[in-house]
Image (cartoon, rainbow, N blue to C red; front, side, top):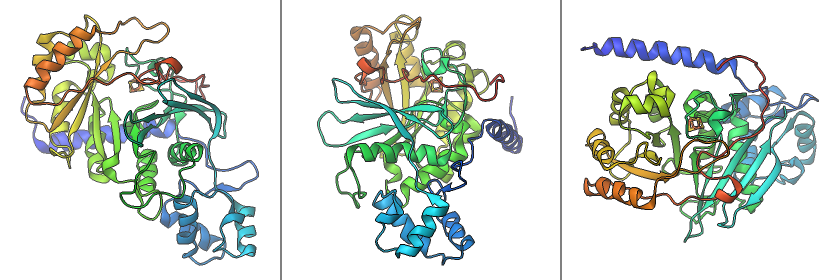
Amino acid sequence: MNVPAMRVADFDAAERARILAKVARFAPPPAELPDGRRDLIGLSRDELAAAMVAIGEAPFRAKQLWHWIYHQGVTDFARMPSIARPLQEKLAARFVVGRPATVVAQTSEDRTRKFLFRFRDGQEAETVYIPDRVEDRGAVCISSQVGCTLACRFCHTGTQPLARNLGAAEIVGQFMAARDAFGEWPSPRGEAPRLLSNIVLMGMGEPLYNFENVARAMTIAMDNEGIALSRRRITLSTSGVVPMMDRAGAELGVNLAVSLHAVTDALRDELVPLNRKYPLAELIAACRRYPGASNARRITFEYVMLKGVNDSVAEARALVRLIAGIPAKVNLIPFNPWPGSRFETSSPAAVARFAEVVNAAGFSAPVRAPRGRDILAACGQLRTASRRAHGEAA
Ligand code: SF4
C-alpha cells in the first residue's frame, strides 16, 4: 500500500504523543531532598540561571556553577573558591549537587566494572564501565530506566518490569559517579585522553521510551564547558522505537545502534516483541533516513548470536540484503547466558561463518568479546531487584 507522506507524518506525531503520554506515567520523582533542597544536577543552563535569579542572584552565577559542577566535578559548595563564602552558604541551604549512591561496585577479572546505583526513592539501576583492552579509554554503559517494558526474549533486564523512568540527573549522574570512582576530574579538555571516553545508552531500559530525560542528560554531557563529551562518543541503542528515532537524530545527533537480532518479522516478533508494532521495513526505513549517518559515523546493528535460532549462513545473507546501502557495521554478540534463559550461545564456528558472509558484503562485523560475564555485567545480563511503583501493566 502506498501511504502518502503526510499520513506517515501524522501517524508518527500521534504515535509520538502516545509514547510521551505513557512516559509521563512512569515519570521519575522530583530531584529534591526531603528537606526541600533541590538537586542542581539535571538542570539545563537556562534553568540553572533561572534558579539563581529566583534566589536573588545574578544569572552569571550559573556559568560559575556549571564549571564547578560539570568541569571540576565538585559536589560541595564550600569547595567552589570563585564563589564568596556567604553565597556558598546560601546555595548550600537551598540546593545540593547530588550523585546516586553506590551500593555495590564489582570488578570483573577482565577489569570491567559494574556499579549498582541507588537513587533517592530507593530504586536501583546498574551501570557498567567497559575498559578498552589495549588503550587507556573505555565506555560507560548507562541505564535509562529501572526495568524495561520491552521483554526482549534473550535479555535478563527484560524480565524485570518497568518500575519507572530515570530522571536526567540520574542518567548523567551515573556517568558522573563512575567518573568519581576513577577520579577523572576535572573533565579532560578537547582531545586529551579520557579513561571514561564514551557513553553507550545500552544499559537497563529503552532510551527512546524516556527520550526527554535522556536528551536532557546527554545535552549536559556534551556541553563544551562541562563534561564536554563529543556527540561522536555517545551511542544511543534502541530496540526500534521508530517514531522517536528521527527526533533522536535531529535533536541529539548521537550515534545510533539498533538491536536487530533477526532478519524476518516472524522471528523478530518473537525475539524483540516491539517488532509487532514497528516491523522491520519501518525500522530499516528509519535507519536509512537517520541524520548524520555516514561512512565515518555508521549505524551499528546489534545481532545477538543464538544457537540454532538466528545464526545460519542463509540469515547472514538475508541480513546483508536487508541493510544494503546503509552506512553500517554489524556487532555480533555471542549470547550471554543468565539464570533461567532458554537460549544457548552460537558455536564459535557458526559465529565465524556468519561474520564471513557479512564481511564479504563489505560490512565490518566484529565479534564482540563478552565482557564482565563473571559479574553478570555483560550485554543483556543487567537486572536489579527493583520495586514497581505503579502496579500496572506496562
Ligand atoms: S534488550 Fe534492551 S529493550 Fe530489550 S528488554 Fe533488554 S533492556 Fe529492554
